Length: 285
Length: 322
Image 1 (tube, rainbow over the protein chains, first blue to last red):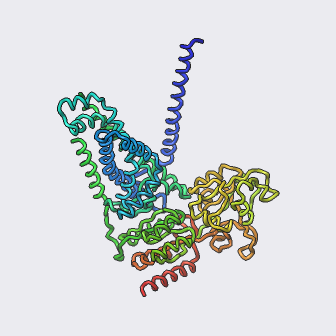
Image 2: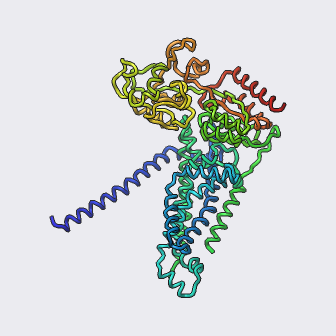
Image 3: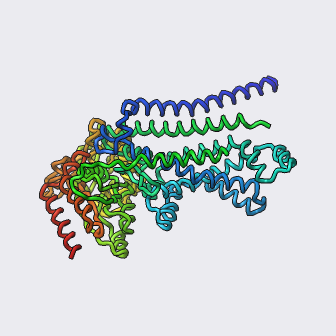
């Protein structure tokens, strides 16, 4: 056996290994989603969406939790996106590259790995108690914003880094100021990467339960939250509550609520993807 | 430009959302309004949820919210005066009580229902029919860790096969109650068992393991009768009924299922108890709580017991107005 044959065998082996790994993940996802759909699809109707929670699983609905989740998503996006993207731009384009910047960089990356419940404790103390927001939507969204800021900052920086240097230099050569360069060249060119980071971060925020329970998000809310200072529940808490109940009917409700949560995430990602594609087509030098 | 558009879009979304709320129900019989904040035990949660749901039908303007931070988590908030009522699956600890005293919060404990802790094994387990409290203690006490590993160490006639233990997680009031009743000291047991805060996980585990033994709320057994086998408990005290007793609505209610039948509580903050809507709610709880507790899988107290809890609460309210 000569080297060329050996290499080809290795090459193929790795290819099949890669295929196996990919299909393992996809298979697991398919089993999970299939299982959920079989169990929960039949339960979903308009009443399920518009009813309040109830002790009777057939009458129980997800309205306050669903609206709470939409509120949290919206507020978290409003708080976290400007902060995260601006911080990313500053660190990448304006900030000096000295030791302090290095330390900051390492710490931001580390923050992305801190368990979410720690953010919950921080949020409870700072937003809930010191700033007096209590267990409101605003406190929840602020806490989740802290949680996802590192992801947004890091992905913004990576996206800016990926823009070819020649673009930046050409812009400066034309006499553009730093801000003009960032606004007209760097941001549009890196938009795809930035928004991918934002999607990943927001999707993570939607699924969080632990930090919200810690700051005081509720499980039974008999009203639809109408302002950022209202108390709230979110879908993951409703699902968690239903799954741990003894009656089978609640397990079915939980499966249905999971489908709705997946749909919400799916629609959000769809919108972001659409925006990204539209934007990228326009960038032409 | 585009960024600004996105920003306006999201603000627009927020405004849209804020307009969806606030539908008012005109058929309010009594003009009661306000907000009642309940938090605490996830075991008591289904009862409080059911009561809040029924209460809303009669008093639509009172917003009753219920959280599930756990008995301990709830007492932390209760001690800070952040909630009006705490659901508890055990009595308040002296450490928690002293926090309440320090922040000048007085409170009243009210029983609202019973729960039985069921001790269960796998249906294929042919040898265990009943067990004494002393034997359970031998299995669960901290000293048993790494030593009590086989069924025949508990009773010689049982097989020499491994014993696999399942139980509530250490953060739950259920764990505190079980260890208090069986081991004799709250929050003290062996650590080498499969713990979960979600009883359905325990049901799953025990129903697929022939050598398993575990405990959880009776409602979880009732919903999974075909997958589990109930074990009778003998506390070797004849005044509570002779021999081993299986948990049931009857035996928990008449307290012969001892010591694993436990009361569930609500704790009411005295400041909150001065408010009309809270008084009405607690009254409503003690009037309808029994029936609703039965509906969600717990065991109602006797009518006399509800009456005496009500009298206790009324007396408490009177001392406040003086």
